[in-house]
Image 1 (cartoon, one colour):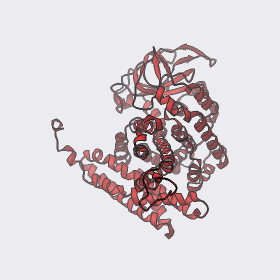
Image 2 (cartoon, one colour; image 1 turned 30 degrees about the vertical axis):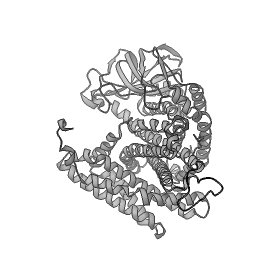
Image 3 (cartoon, rainbow, N blue to C red; image 1 turned 90 degrees about the vertical axis):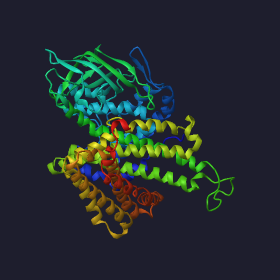
Image 4 (tube, rainbow, N blue to C red; image 1 turned 60 degrees about the horizontal axis):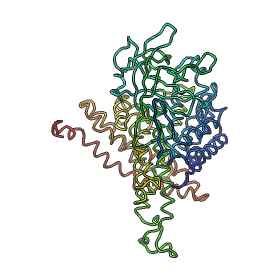
Length: 592
């Protein structure tokens, strides 16, 4: 496997040249005095060194050793505790955290790049700080000042970790039917009883304490999702002076044996009258959880991008080195017995597909992160509301489309290796196994598609969608003739999406099945169209600078490949959406 190298040049291109993020930061109170282009560059440079030097070398060994469980105690693979200490000492756990409690205070668009790097280096490792950051986000947004002061500093610093305890054996997507109970106590605390499954980082040996955020129901809670509350439940009780006290009444019953992410502890957690404290108000747990969800679902999309990037780096190095057969047009490497496989059309097709999807995904995930920053920091109500609605619209696309494209990308990388891609030695098969979970957790991609179409498009009457469509139209209307090769197909793509959206809104009124029948293909068309917008923006920048550097020439060539070979996929997907739901219901259940 090739040594991991952080794609810092492309990150700087997206942030500084395409989106000019420093201009956005200058307009947002809370960021204008915290970060500028030079600060961001220094942070990303250092992050790249840490991920490549300390985290990436543990990827294969961590996968081979995995986590172990013994009588409630979970041990991570060799080297993980030391690497986590290095990661924590660098402040990376709290890179996006609130400076009032020791966080670095960076915008999401910067922490998104750090997430990409750590997950490219080692996805299993990256899940531990990701869950801690997610727990911190909910605590900071919804908990009392007392809880924030007591827990956030040690979580941001990496001294303590965090977990999110949502899923139960009978309740995955449908959290409204959870059975975990919370009983109020005279001192203001609660006793929490129940079992949670699939809990990432629920138990491990990386930190001295783990702060669990647990969804549970109060005795008088209304039925369904409106009756969910959120509780902070530490593994080890924390004394008034901040020192650690007795172990809480909770335990890890087992860990899962999984297809991938084997160095990430996926735990069954038993809460046996554990002591906890409510976060926010009674029956407001789902709202507190969704504060975290938009960030976490984007984060899962970035995990997919990360694995696609790692697969591409491996594959392109291999394709330049491996010699097999001659180029169709005649020998290229005349001093060798055969040519490098990068000369062959099919290998180039796969490499360019990987490159186009990765770079489009990096731009799109950064764009969504910018909307999160605007929604969080803007003081202008209209601007903030628009950003919030764009985040709501684009989050399921980012989660599902990036991870769907990541599986395609990791498979292409394996295919380029041929038989070597199927064996452990080269690392490509691990990337595919690790990638597969990204399409499943934090809400399966089918659920993301239902969320996009049912809630965000149909549910808003098309209002959320209108923001994005109008922005793209404003770009295409203002583009000059030199961009025609990119703008014209983008115009066609957004017009296609417009027609599909209006048609689906109309059909959904008469038949509720239309939403579910169309949702997955609709999300895919939306994703390709969104990437087309990103590629048109990148092409505009690269076109103006193509005489300066080969980087821009490469960027233009990749843009042309995307518009010529990948964007046309929307036509078959659109045909599937237009076909409607009727064919899905031609069979009775017994006929399957």
